[in-house]
Image (cartoon, rainbow, N blue to C red; front, side):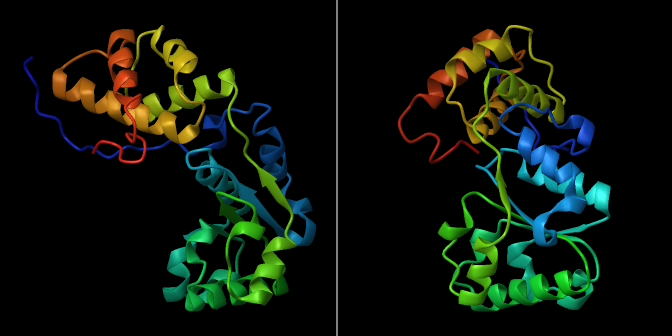
Length: 233
């Protein structure tokens, strides 16, 4: 089969409130983000698996509140007093577990931001009790923070997530492609992301439309053991 050159073009994710599809799996989280002025203690932990919409909701909250967003791993090199002077979202907090400098930075950011009357949003893929934080004072504060979780998607939400992922890549699948995928794929947000990326790559390299036939071929590859542990480039 003739293969076309493909280019690694940037994917521009739409992160506005209007781009976030509300379903039972995420309705509580959305309600808390929209009612952020009423967070208990002015802070919230947003939990959910990779690709579930945590970053999207962080941006929705930042747009609504004027908050800054920073990755937890970047806290060591950050100006903590400057960050604490505004509302702040810290993403992927479990990734700093065991990093003494980063944990101390988050501890000071937490205390300074709240002392100045600002709100703090933290994101993670699991409950705070399982983050593995080594600093006892930080761990206790995180575990005492109000939390909400983005649950596994139902059919409507999974369809909406796939549609958004395709749109982010400027792909237009045939009408039967998304229902075909939803009926057969693992019900996980990260699987949806990997599937759409693989469909995009296959369509570009082979000069094919994103349709049910191509979806069937990509799903067949995803059924191979270990593929999701080592996704294709």
